[in-house]
Length: 54
Image 1: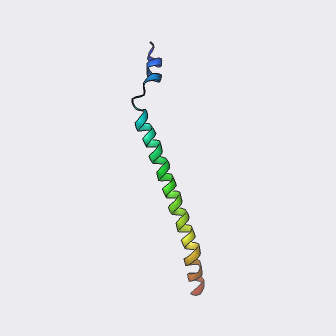
Image 2: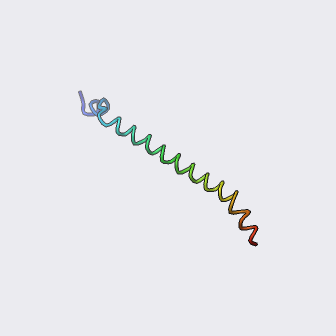
Image 3: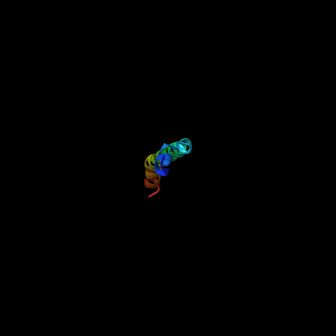
């Protein structure tokens, strides 16, 4: 068996890579959700509040 074939068949690091990808996707979704919530709160509360003081 050649070195390349052994490398392709080696799955020892696969679970850790998969967990890393899942963790990265979860982090991106959390950041996007928090950003959207912040934008919605800004539009709902700070827009009218600043208009009231102008």
